Image (cartoon, rainbow, N blue to C red; front, side):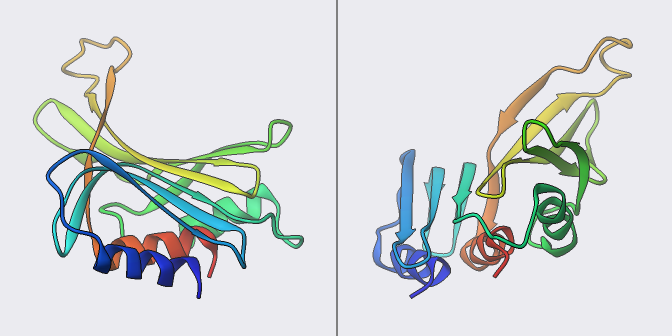
Length: 162
């Protein structure tokens, strides 16, 4: 059974909750795992604060290739992702929403941080716009994001590269 299938089964078996909790699922065969920090969850969706996916390091892929593949494949988030920065010496990459969602005096966007070719962390942020902040650096706050269970499963599969 794959990590995505294990996650599907865990979501179906566990009770919905209005309490903040972590959901952890692993697949021993592939060495992959997912940890989801959940604010609340019902039978069809969840409000997540953070999604962390870990996988075994593939022999045929470097951090740049993984970042580009994620940017091209992930379609279950509100905005498409783009590769913003690759730090080759540190083996890290930063992806962000290509077109952040704009609100009256703020923007919201997704951020994905890759650590090597084994770990991806997805978070959503809200930042004050430059106009509202009088030209000062925008302040940002991590905010929860909503995903249907099917969207979550697709996102995990896309991050894993399956």
